[in-house]
Image (cartoon, rainbow, N blue to C red; front, side, top):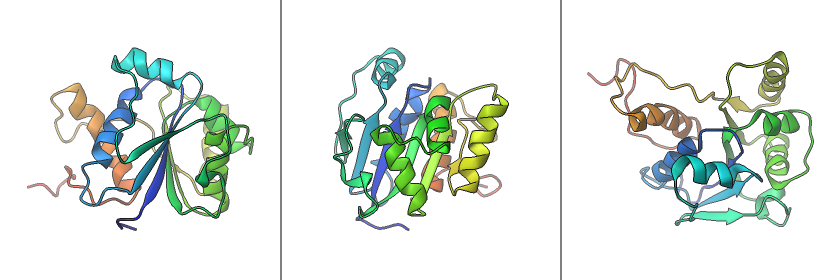
Length: 191
């Protein structure tokens, strides 16, 4: 799926874990063939959480372009768009539940609905623990509909030394799932 013309959507919701989205945006700018555009959408409270957790306001740097969650006037709100992947990172259980149940009441949930109906890549990165049966059922239904559920569960086999190293174990997994060529630690392949 690697190409220079890829356009992807990154939705950032009100779950804790803004650092995952921050590092993901940085990484997408560093991959061998970066996307042409990363459309960024924040849920209502996500910007507050971003500021609280990262200590900085969000400033979209190329290839990122911010869109309002309150409108459907965005190209990827339609199946006719050329956006091929949506990543929701971090994904709140509220957003996950609305998508799982077909409630397209904002740009994030509408875009996810488009990705599912068009059989495009939808990667949902929940940052919640523990899961209730409702959460598990919603994630099951999304998986059956074609979404990829990638919990923000760091791995330790690369022997991460810092919080950033630990965060990057999740970010690199997301980048792999999104289909970008990614130079990262791989189990039993880095000898």
